[in-house]
Image (cartoon, rainbow, N blue to C red):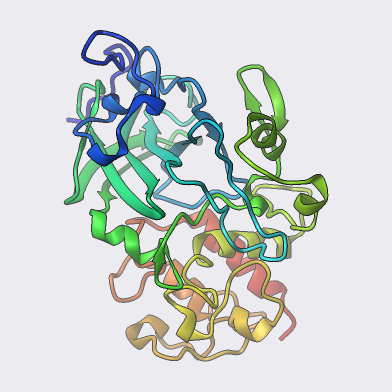
Length: 353
């Protein structure tokens, strides 16, 4: 039986019953045994209320992970800042040493009431120390009081009711630590893939009001950037943005869900299929391009993207599968993103044959 808990809490207290703060930690002792020991959150741990200098952030176009909700935070040491190269829009921010990214995965019991009862499954940390990024995964307990360091991964039964009142149940796949490398790999270097200027250049709601995220980062000293440099990079768009074109929504979706591997510097570079938003050659999007080596992943289809044939393209065939030898992405999901498949089908149908 699945347990959702909104009433049992755990405070982030140090050995002297004082609130812990990430700035007080010795990075040489990482990974810590429990999530609560880092001091990212104050008060009730499962409320995910950020501590001092722990800043919430939200991407414009989130990665699909079996319909899980996500709450993301960043922390940097006092006096340190991230930077970026405005001439390299697909590169993640260059974070300073002792930067920490915190990503929580959870499911509301009822998606129609996202702020009500919920179950947090895991929290993933990316920590930069002595110039190297390391991944530390934490599994939340059934009581929702804390999360323990767990490197082996796990299948977790989870259920929810969606926005239309339909019940769902899956075996959520918490990846093992080594699987992180399969996506977080750029030029054979392990690094973050989500925090990029093109993903953060939009307003979100903070406790003290709504503000553009990059402006907030600059004010906090978390980012060194000029307005001109930021404006040089075109932001992505959400797949649900009704004001954006079908092409922009589809290309943004592919960038986020596929482009971290399918780009000239990613693990799938040799495929010649480049799905980062900045790629301008339709052939590299897969248009009339036959795969280098897809095996059963190609099905009976010839082209990655067959213009005008959304249901007769390898891309949508692989997106619409959960078979281990067919599905893309290969990790990070156990279910089909129905809305994502529909978006890419519509986009391919819109392309001139």
